[in-house]
Length: 457
Image (cartoon, rainbow, N blue to C red; front, side, top):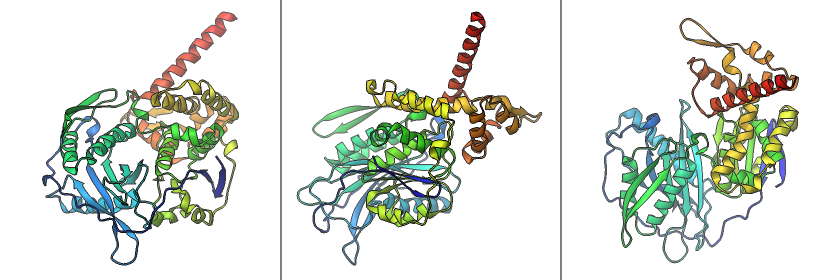
């Protein structure tokens, strides 16, 4: 995969894939979708973590504009229909529903009717003013029927990051879409009433399909929930290990990163994977897995961003007034960088499942943070009122390796680290999460190593 830098503190990574566009410009007769029942949005039960399974199922179709040959993405189906909303809630919903079609068809308005179109599964992220995020899980496909047609998008809006689980839900939606929209409704109603499962647990839905009878659909969350929103396969397919490490290095110092690819699926999966490499830290800056054509000016903003741009807009990106830095190979401590590279290469061809691949790719980067900042809890000083105060200077000094210390002195100034520490300062009891587990394992390994060294002496 060719790599090219195009911006100040920016690396541009691109993948050459076949483009998708064919046929002649025609209007799609389209089908008007009737909702089997107009439902009010009754209060939903609150599940683990205060999250509902999903907020909306939307169908976004292309409708020809009144003037010209361009098409405009439009919501043609919405479940549920929310009624009796307060003014503020209604305004928020209107803003949300206005933005969604743009991200379902980020390719622009010039479309042609098609007889064949490979389905695409992708996702986008919408960030609220308060920093909370909603995820749109999309399946773009051709509707059933003879002759040239325009693609449509099924989009599920949720606050939950679980790409594999929602991909399976979209499989079920697609299967029902081939029969009738009326068959989708009871399935989504059952899903809406179901309790969102805890990590490693399964929820089973009963659904009736004409000519097939009653089906039982099982939806299982991965036991390791910190990777359930990501699939590293695309990243491994598109980039070499060295390039993945360079992306990681740029992201750690909160630089500007653009991915270029033809396919929406490739873009969204790669950018989600890149953000997941930062675990246990969270990217808090501009984050757009697939940038719509109308928002391409985003790549000129002065703040950090991580965005995906379709290859057809490559020239607009290349023409952006930015300069390249190109020091990614010098950001990470050399020894730790070599450790990551070595771990990624070991046994890579023996991995069979998505879960194995995710753990294999994520593990070395988690270990990197364990070795560089895993001692953070020991340098939070607790006051009588229960408020913690992070001792930054002592924390950095505790590192014996000069190269590690040089890196950490830069990293502690990032928003990634600041937000993480702010959360840690709120509670004296460290959360019993995956990162904490890896810290304890690493500390135990160091103790055992010291014990063996003493025995030898």
